[in-house]
Image 1 (cartoon, helix red, strand yellow):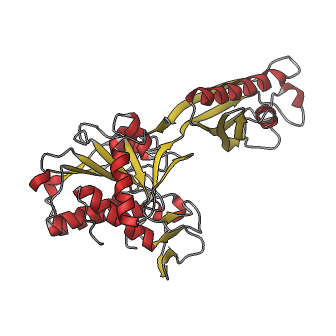
Image 2 (tube, rainbow, N blue to C red):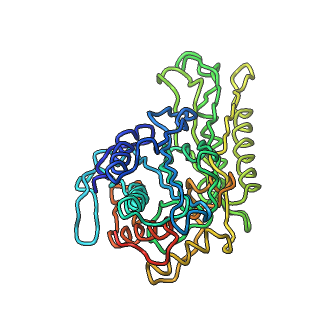
Image 3 (cartoon, rainbow, N blue to C red):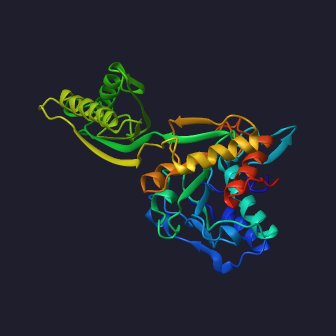
Length: 387
């Protein structure tokens, strides 16, 4: 509850990182064990700090076991700033009607912190461990994308805490492009010489209407190939008496199939370029289109026999007493970039539900299950510890 109350939107995570490092210090971890990297310097959103990385050498009979990674992102979406967590029976929700709770992903960050504090305070035997709290996940998985694999110690098993029920194991996720589309028209006086202008608004409108008509906006289903697309931001114009010369749109495209994702992208390009050619002024001049496309994250799907999947499945069965559910999601996770960079990463739950809304809640029982899962995975033992 303390962590969810700390403001920490993407790019402004210093306060929550301070809370985590102070908790680790109280548990006996030396300050020299902390490392903050510079992942935030690669972000378009800048930022005040990078990822927090803590590496612990293995102890006891597990000192030479394969290294394990436990991770979670610490940033929240802006709607969670000013959250005031309150407990109502078996749930925690925000006491303010106009804010989200921040369980996404303070619940996951707390589960990893709980495992670390338990190990330090109780001197639990454990394999070589890397603990990673990432920044700027919500704006494009920036922390996971730019963390140094060498800094992580090349872990063999990796577990990301960022979901709901602890028995729900996310073993795959979609891939996504983000893009900006600049529509260049020609300005003219809208009352005196409107026929000399080329309206960027009209070009954008025609393109959007065409994409909608052809089934390439929203849910995109073409035979067995599926994906999604969305134009989320449209900016342009300064006055009603000027034919708008420029409009900028921000959009995203998602699909588990990289080839089909490129098909959707191609339809976007063709729709806007066709619209630009259709809108001409009295002199025959038309508009221009400029696309700036970048990959947000690539899709992945882990084999169910992957070592991290098997270990997570067995842990979920033991901790919850329920049959684990393997699932693939249509959102992006830090696991996308870790897996694509060679570290197969399973994502597990710690009780969050309704993320990015004012109705967000934390299921306390599931959160405690996530904490027990974190301890079990961090210590590689068959006996889970209670939070």
